[in-house]
Length: 145
Image 1 (cartoon, one colour):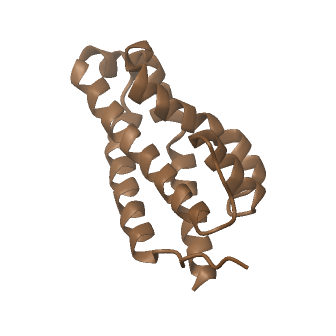
Image 2 (cartoon, one colour):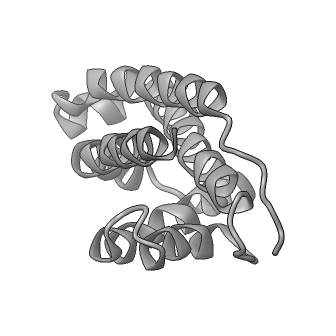
């Protein structure tokens, strides 16, 4: 039987701190009306930056956890779905949030297609999901000690 390396709890906690900092920065925009958000082009850039970093943190932790298990994933969306199938996060939560992984790819590879309205809506509607990933990851890490 193959033995996998233990989780790097310090790495997970550091990444979660980074995610939380980015979510906190995004929350500054969540109370802003869309017209105000759209009026200053810097808002879009800041939101895009912090959202991409938060999502990359979520996916990096997910990949780290899965690298310690006999699981192979081919893309970011599959990372989230595998976490759900394994019970690391609830399966329905994984299904609901699998598109966040695709969104990260869009932000990185076809960023010119993303509108300010889209970034704004995600900032309004999805930050709690990103925070929930952190809770699930910490809970899983505690159980592994």
